[in-house]
Length: 134
Ligand code: T46
Image 1 (cartoon, rainbow, N blue to C red):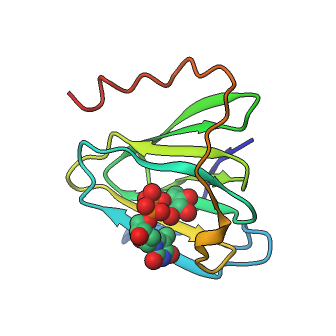
Image 2: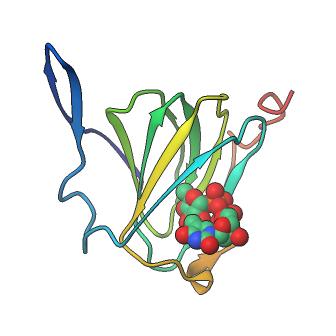
């Protein structure tokens, strides 16, 4: 299942510095970021191989995760929070605000064949997002 961690953050009189180091098995092969995504739901897939780390470095968003057995909603509202997603974790990112920047790191290069668009059929009690898109 996905894991929410708090990244090492060094605070000094000149501000804060947050470190992402040695957290993705196999290292980081790809970095991308998502922004300008107000009032939409992104993701809606799982992967064959890719492990992802998600960190909302500005603003906030929510991530719905379903691993086929359990489901959870994670609230990324701090640049110190980092969500590690396993390949089999179905993910949906939503509730972005205007200033949200969701930084995503992957241990794999981009490969459309790595995507699985078929959701799990297990109970999805949190899946009503109608309130998000009001
Ligand atoms: C994931 C979540 C967290 C590329 O050309 N290269 C890339 O590295 C990526 C990530 C995407 N694309 C293309 C593929 C689509 O034509 O950019 C377009 C948007 O991608 P997608 O709809 O997959 O983006 P999200 O926000 O739904 O999902 C992304 C990642 O694709 C996905 O792996 O886990 O962020």
